[in-house]
Image 1 (tube, rainbow, N blue to C red):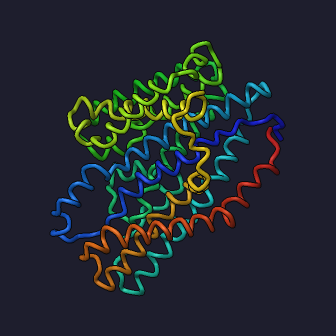
Image 2 (tube, one colour; image 1 turned 90 degrees about the vertical axis):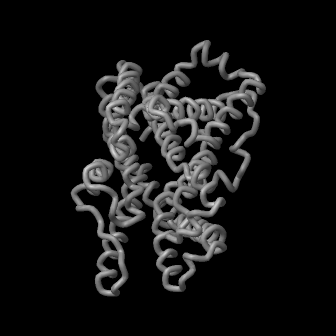
Image 3 (tube, one colour; image 1 turned 90 degrees about the horizontal axis):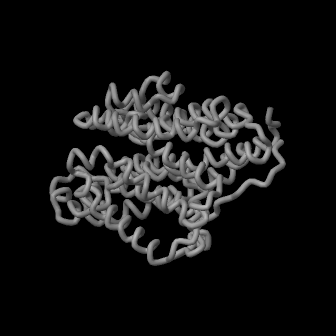
Length: 371
């Protein structure tokens, strides 16, 4: 077992939760009522708060940063890297809950056939078991069980984890070059797929640049060059300006990235902002605020994988409940009651899952000896 002290980035847990909130905001409003959808409040929400893509951006950049940091930290401390151990740790964290949700999906579909409720089917298991759901959506659409659609992003991350483990094991010196190639490839693909929205959104090539930028950030930080030391001492005024630009970018996201040119660089722009936020929270001396001091947000960040996996299931089940009682046409229910209840239930279920299902499985990694 590795005995070196691993760096823990405590300030990043709360960021995971904030990223989840953007995903939750994307999905929390449930209604087919034309009057509600035509209301000014709904239109404002749709234009400025339905931005789950920002959450995906952050998760992908953060994954690239943390995975690369872990690998380079292991190299720095032990002069070697255990590929099998790396993959096993990733599997112990991701797979149990992922496959549990697939089993729940299968049960819901089976139950719906006997109850008469309308529940969509699920994709062929071959796509789910091989973590290629994003390519299934590109080719066949997303008309299947609501909460499983979100797992396209897990497919993308698992593909990138597999690639990154191989590159890190046998081509470590080429990591920066591979990152640059992935960023260029991602931009080229976005030009190619510009007028194919599904391909542009779900294809792994559209997201690999985010991961690569996060990886470059880790490579830059772990080297600890003089440039790194200077950036650590950024004055608060500069940090404040960048945060203001980021907030403006979020609030007017759909308007800013409406043109073809801005659509092409959309992922690149978001990745740069999130790389700065990760750097500022993890390394800067002059924080505007320290997210690591927010205990409750930190805990919600720790269980954010569960929040992500469970929230779609909770929304789907609550939607069936609302349909039964005819509350989907009620503005109070749509905008307040439903979001509050689904969020609260998601947090409760995720906390239970983390403490009694996910954490015990994750502890198994301490019993596995690296090669």
